[in-house]
Length: 153
Image (cartoon, rainbow, N blue to C red; front, side):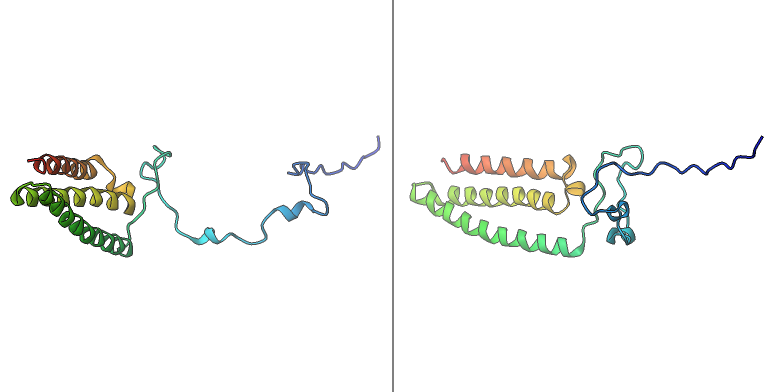
C-alpha cells in the first residue's frame, strides 16, 4: 500500500459566526492588557464560602474627614432649627423651660439620626449593622417622639 501523508487537523476556531463587515477574527480581541490588570484585587468577606457577599472597602481618611464636615454642618443647621422650634413653642404659650427641653430633644434626635445616615453613606458594609445603626436610630426616634410630647405641655 501506498504511504499516505496525513494532513494535520486544525482545532475548530472560536469564531462565533457573527462578523461585522470588514472585521477580521482578531479585531474583537483587545490588543493590550486592560488598565485593571495591575490594580489590587478586592476580596469578598465570605471568600469562596460566600461569593454573594459585598467586597470589603476600606474607608479612607479623606472620606471620614468629608463625612465629619458634613455632620458638623448638619449640627449647625439643627441648632438653628432647634431655636426656631423653641420660639414656635413659646409663641404657642408653652412654658419656656418645656420649650427649651423639647428643643434640645429635637436637636439630639436629629443629630443621632443624621449620624446614622452619614455613617451608612460613608461605608455601608462596615457601619450599617444592627449593633451600630440600631442604637443610633432608636435613640433618635425616641428623642424626637419625646420632643413632641414635651412640647405639648
